[in-house]
Structure formats: structure tokens, C-alpha cells
Image (tube, rainbow, N blue to C red; front, side, top):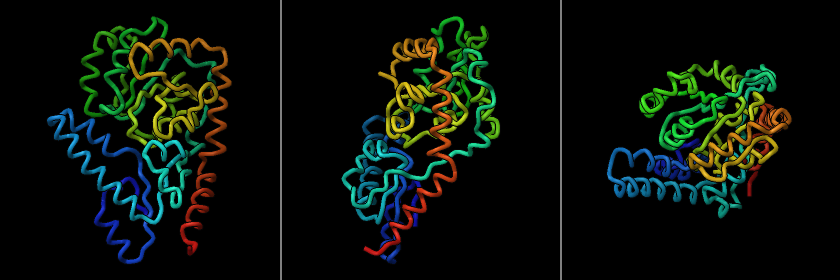
Length: 290
């Protein structure tokens, strides 16, 4: 039995173990931290910390009693403190991208100087920081926001002047079938995320479309966004740092090479076929008697 994401469901995990089942936990990221960041906007900070800590305790017990643990990448396992379970840890999970749908459609050199964010507009994505960045971009750079969430209205109000002037664009929620087209419109995907996600899907999809990624070096990100090779890692997720580094990145003369390297990485390591092979290996090892 694989518990995907729901690693704090201790009772079902224990029940499955009592039935003699092989129980595998596959966390999607740091759930307690994600909950804390969002709860702090609604309830007192101390209460939010206590509640998130309770969820974290349930997760730790679940990890302890599970048969196996699968993470997206080795760096994600380290971020979540799972290296201690080395005897049952499988740190190369089976994330994949449809490399036919997510492909390089617009040649990188033909793209306009547009940077973008694609994803859920919540606190853990540091949308407020990106708004500060978008307010002070050089005149030749446009910032495009794609997605929906609880901070969307706030963002549109905060950047009303920039949206009116055309230096900022907001597309709102788009169907997943439209995401490849959106990614092919931008030169750089910007994600100053907190370490709440194991490996954002937007990163894999962006690289598949030949769009370099500029992101915080959290969780599994550094295993995929390789500095100066497939993308760039933020020195800090402060607005001033992001704005300065982003401008420098867009002036590089090797971005087309980085674009090609990102696409190659996804095709080789994160295609459906590659993921099936990884999962086949993991499941075979889990089913082998000790």
C-alpha cells in the first residue's frame, strides 16, 4: 500500500501494517511547514506552530513504522530529515513529465524578455516577494503571473499600476493543457518557494519546454535545477537579491545552451519511460523478502 502525500495518516498506516501489508510512504513535501505558513495567516502563530508540530509528530511515527519511504530526489530526502532511514529509503522516485505535450515549441532565441511565475498563489510560494520584484523590474522586462489561489486578488490589487502600464501580466487560472504554451512564452521561470514541496511540477514542465528555472535551493530543487547548467539557484529569496540576479541571468549569452540542457535532462531522467523503470526497480526491491 502506497500512501502518497498523506504521510500523517497514522491510523491507516498502522492498520495496514497490522494486516501484514507492505506500507510505503511517498511524501510530496514538508506538509507541517506548509500548514504552518498558511495557518499563521488565520490563527495565532503559537497555535499554528503547535498544530503543525502535531502533524509533524504523526509523520515521524509513520516513517518509523513504514516498510519503505520514497522521495523524488536525494536532496528532498535530506531536506525532510529522512536520511536516518537509509535501510528503507528510496531517494529516486518516479516523477515524470509528458515530454510530448511539454516540449520546446517556440525557439528560445525567439522569445520576448518575459519572466514568469506559474503555480498556486499561496504564502509558501512567496508571492508577496515576487510582487515586490515585479514593481521594480527594468523597463525591458515583463513579469507574467499564471495561476490562482488565495493571494491572487491581493496580487492584482498590489500590482494594479504595473498591470495597467503593461509591465506585469496576470493570466489567472489556466487549464493544464495551456501550460506548455505559457511556458513557451517566457525566458525564465521564477520560483522563490519555501521548502514545502518535494519537487515542484512546474520546474520539470518548464525545463521540458526549454525554459530555464531560477529557484530557491530547497528540497529536491538542486538535483534538477543545476546551477549554470539547467538553471539557477537563488542566493536568497529577498526581493532585492532576486531582482538583481534575475537581471544578470537574462543578460547571459549562454541561455540557449542552458535551455537545451534542461530539455535533455528531462527527456533522459524524467520521461514516463525513465520513471517506469525507476519504479519497477523500487517495487521489485520492496517485494523481495528480507
